[in-house]
Image (tube, rainbow, N blue to C red):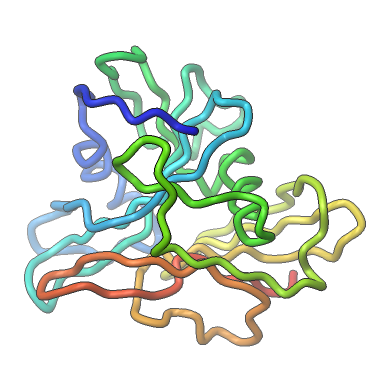
Amino acid sequence: MAQIHRTTMRPTKLELLAAWLPTRAWYADGERGPEPVRAGGFRLDDPAGEVGVEFMAVTDGEGADAVAYLVPMTYRDKPLEGAEDALIGTSEHGVLGTRWIYDGAHDPVLVGELYALLAGRAVPQQQSVSDAADPTVAAALDPAAAVAGAVEVLEVSDGADRTDVRVRASGGEPLVLRFHRVLRVGGDTDGEVLGRVTAEWTPAGGAARGAYVTVHRG
């Protein structure tokens, strides 16, 4: 299980995201620039115990105009080869030292554990508590698409409000894991849906729930 350290990070995740969000195709420009606020999420465990895996929801803006974004992130103790364009930034962790923080949609460890979660082979963990399952996260996948084994990432593409990760498991047909970058209540009305991960976030004025990720034919 992932160990949550009560320590410092310099710069913080939110400081890194404030600089990174405007570089994304799916970011809706605000009048004052990004001011992200943590609004929810969950973690997954890397079976190898080497990579931190987090699905973070942040809100940006005020009141009814605030937009909620999904930012999946991975934390590594060295650079991920070939993923320079996916680097959010580096941070000095008070316990673990330098951490390379990546957009998790481009990290094969996060994508693999996401597929395992959808297929019922991984357990979502609370975002800020060590060794604690998060019962508020729900995941389901059409049994016909739940192929045993690891998945290979074929392509990653950003859209106006999403990132699509096309994958294939051995013996299976290609699938698209759609990360809903702009979070909306429900959030999974884009054609046939073979599976989904739903979770909560906290916008101004109360709690919300919707699809963080949906699965489509590839």
